[in-house]
Image 1 (tube, one colour):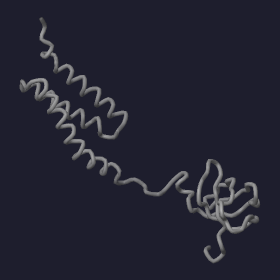
Image 2 (spheres, helix red, strand yellow):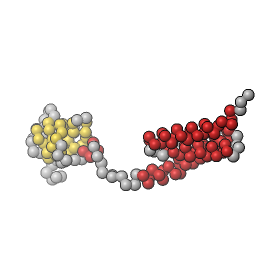
Image 3 (cartoon, helix red, strand yellow):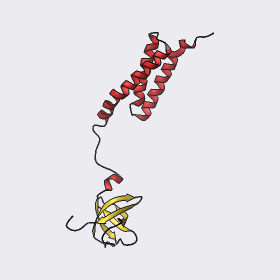
Image 4 (cartoon, helix red, strand yellow):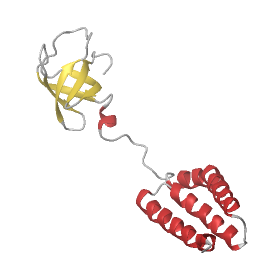
Length: 156
């Protein structure tokens, strides 16, 4: 009968290789920490430890690295990010001018960034219509329509 435990090192190498490949695709340092844990499991195999001790060692090292090293690496990698909102988040609170009157139906608004959007009034807005040229502010983006409120001249 063949003793399969003598081939456990192959399993450890395959696990390390797979984790490194997945890490290269995700770039979140999770599978890299599991790969290092698997290296610890391989090391415990080479020291002659039992299979359950190898798994416990790999799991312990992986968890330890995930809880200590990974947050530091993520913080370092994200240190230079641009905190400026973009896409839909950048439109929230943006000012604009009405291009086509907004009443019961939608109208058009030219925003401060130069984009023209279909617009409708926010529910509960005091004026029920907004004429061309009036100043407005975006409160919500709903699909391809911005929900706006009129800006009182004192607020502008």
